[in-house]
Length: 201
Image 1 (tube, rainbow, N blue to C red):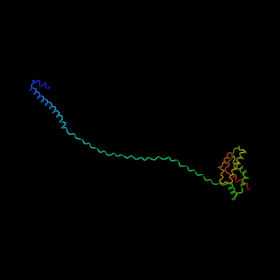
Image 2 (cartoon, helix red, strand yellow):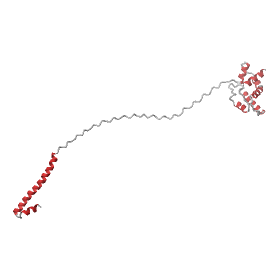
Image 3 (cartoon, helix red, strand yellow):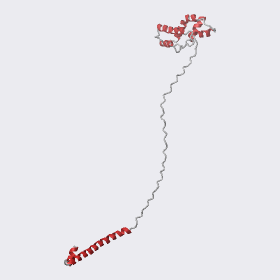
Image 4 (cartoon, rainbow, N blue to C red):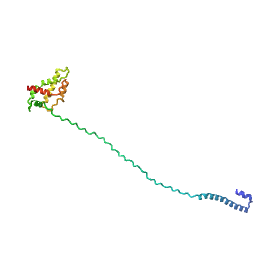
């Protein structure tokens, strides 16, 4: 474009060629000068721009947070499963001697010795029958055989325990058998006393 503009004004010659070169240089300089000035003008605001202030951020020192100490939980020890304490055997009640048949006869006679065993046992059965008859149940179905059985249970018990100071008729098996046969005999004291009186009379 520049060459066309220059060529339209001047005819080509050596001088013209030199002139064109000089003109070109001036045009070129002016063109580049304009660009340089424009670039400089654009650069000036950037240079004149206020220096960027470096904002110092206040480093806030973080205060340690108050940690509320958690209450230490004391673990309760697991209750040990204790085996039940061995049961102490119940104290067996002391069995006090209630006195033998011989002791009761001594008491009745007032003597410190007993010479009545054979005589007592020989005279015992009538006194037993009287006691059984008094303690007979109301049932009329008691046979003669049942009466004899009950008499034998009582006699055998008294013979075996004649000298036994721990004789216990109320808790004996013989008393239970007598009851099954239809007779209620709570004590032997009446039989002993009745028999002794017969001996002495």
